[in-house]
Length: 215
Image 1 (cartoon, helix red, strand yellow):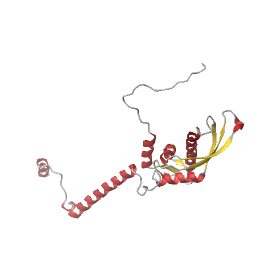
Image 2: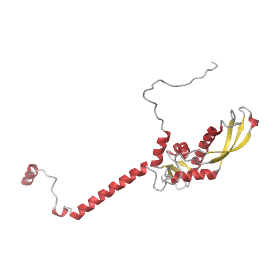
Image 3: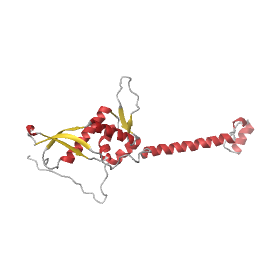
Image 4: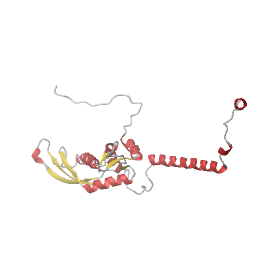
């Protein structure tokens, strides 16, 4: 024991290994192959988090537009009995559609809540699209209604693009609802579309607006 301890101190090395524990050439080759496979899987996982899934190149996305039909009513502000019904169409881009509903999916959302988010977002887009149309200037636009089949199409399209997926979070056996959440790629795209960008560092003065009050 004394001699062995002395040898270890005099001649430091990686370590002592029993003869039956020395890895063979085949074992080393297998270990290297496994390490290479792990690296490949890690690279694939990284791509999945930052790139759309394969096969989506031919799908409508990004700045491609989608036609949405709706009905609504317009009235003069403050005149409850002046409503006039309209039917109309507008054409948001897929980035517009996704950017509007994505925040509701950060902590996942039930399908009814997601459909509600679509309707609310479409109402905002329609307001913006029609507010300056001929005959609607200064009107109050209310009671927007959208076709369920077009919301179905939007939901399927965002799923096909790899932006949303069904949540796999465990729930009570009594909870049979469908829940949706963002994919890692969807979360990345949401941040790119919605995050605020700072103005040029050369301009530091504050910008704002004010209006006169009666007080």
